[in-house]
Amino acid sequence: MVGCRKAFAPASSGSSEVNSEYRAPPLDPEEVDLSERIARTEDEWRDLLSPQQYHVLRKKGTERAFTGEYHDLKAKGAYHCVACGNPLFSSQAKFDSSTGWPSFWAPIAEGRVRTATDTSLGMIRTEVMCNRCGSHLGHVFNDGPPPTGLRYCMNSISLNFEPAS
Ligand SMILES: [Zn+2]
Image 1: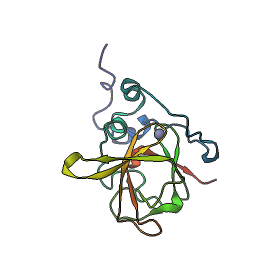
Image 2: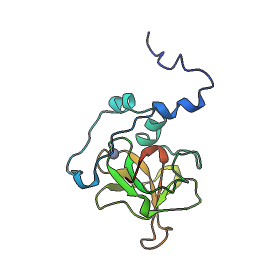
Image 3: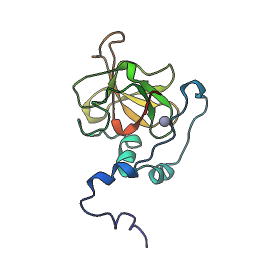
Image 4: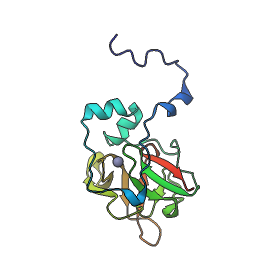
């Protein structure tokens, strides 16, 4: 049987979506080797990630505002790349942007994310990607709070929150 992987999912399976999402084990911030890059083919990513994750992380999609898991989360901890475990943001740099997406004024450390110019949708924006696996995380804007004045506008679905112990 080919292509029937989702055939048995009940039509009204609202809450089961989250469980099917991939979550890479969070890496210890002290032990991340940034020279180590995760390279997977698009087929491998498609098999690993849920369809929603694949759409955002590999096809540079955007989750709908206020629908993600973390936009309103205030707990202490670290936000890791859901695809490779790379620690990306600390709750200490999270702020309430009222945009419906989790927002941070800085990454957790130098070199954890990389950026690129994004000219899609008729806008000039700065795309933010995980520097370890290249997954799309969101965009960074110049209208954030002190001390940086930056607003890293992230998709919850790209992140995996690890509470502080
Ligand atoms: Zn990653």
